[in-house]
Amino acid sequence: MKILFAASECVPFCKTGGLADVVGALPKALKRERHDVRIIIPKYKQIRAQEFGIKDTGKSIRIPIGDKEFIAEIKTCKTEQGIPVYFISSEDYFTRPGLYRDATGDFVDNDIRFSFFSRAVFEACKLLSFQPDIIHAHDWQTGLIPAYLKTLYSQDPFFKKTATLFTIHNIAYQGIFPKTRLPLTGLGWSEFTMDKLEFYDSICFLKAGLAYADGLTTVSPTYAAQIQSGYEYGRGMEGLLQKRSSVLRGILNGIDIQEWDPYTDVFLPQNFDLNHMQIRRLCKRALQRSLNLPDNSEAPLLGVVARMDQQKGMDLVLEALPEWVARGFQLVILGQGDIQLQRRFELMQNNHPLSIRYYSDFNEPLAHQIYAGSDFFLMPSRFEPCGLSQMIAMRYGSIPIVSATGGLLDTVQQTHSPDTGTGFFFNELTATALIATLNYALQYYANPTAWQALQARAMSAVFSWSNSAIVYLQAYRKASPRAALQPTRRMKRFSV
Image (cartoon, rainbow, N blue to C red; front, side):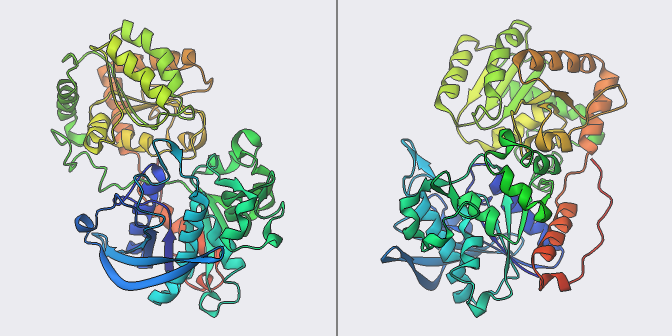
């Protein structure tokens, strides 16, 4: 099968969240299944051509925006696994400091930037003579791709056997823009209806993906059910999703088990695995020393790697901090986002320099070291489509304390006794509930035998992409009549 991943970010080239991890990892698993999979993303300023061996193809295309045309150059490289990656380069749209925003806020022309990219995807396919069976589009930035295939390119013979699958990574981000901008996208007013692009008298790119795509997925089974249940999770899309429920499927994300492997991780001061857990204590000690925290093996060390956002429940962590500090706990937080939350964590660090460390920079080595050195990993999210951090934490032996929502419910098993579970849930989204859940978890932490058994179960959970890739292939075949003619390999046994 010929599969094209179209997305706004991809590891290792550019990343703001879990979307980039998925777009970087899932194609690897599909390639192992012997499919012709390729990736296309914008060529942002921060993607360094020399570092990744990106070269010019010598090919360029012209994309109409309103009554003008803008040039896009096509660049390319291959990943370490040999997957072709294409970059849409534009001086007008992708040479800015950030992917979607700068220090002043979102770029005001994001609608035009990503409609330009979406049109360029089709023109690049034609120029490169790559005729995909499936274009797998991701989140609102590529929501117009399914719409373009059903409108502007519906009569193009090059795409007569192409279908689209659209994945919702986080339905809260919808790409809503003034309807006056519609002519700039190249779509006609006939598409501006309640069952297509229109959303409260505005254009909604996410809705376009949901309405026009041949198949829909989201990143966990529980989240797939939640976003159809009502406005709290569906954010206004629940009615459309209920209408299209027959083509919607929740497929659990995996993690790249080669990148996230404590036995080979180059960022760790000491490597370890399930059979050498005594070495893990050295990772905790090294983390404490590198952060200038007291070298105290008995103090519970809590880790957070998350976006600073109300969605992620960071305000609950802030509320709980005074009690945890008073009890001698240590906390290290890594993440960017809401400026007010960042400032509050910085203030807490200044007031409690022996207990708290907060880092707002993107620091990949430190993220790995937090997973390997923390005792508990906090994810008090108000909603969590899938979540990757809890899977990584478990693989590294850090026990997750999570809210009972979305993909967290699909990946963490509640610990009820010394011989069950891989983590701990709390249901009420309050600091009091978060504190109470950690207090319960500390009973296991205080019992070396129970704690080691809990860590062993967590580290033994399987979250590779292999089985999820097979489920995606089933979704591709359902969406594409042409692809449905190709055989499906049987799934392996999957355990969590």
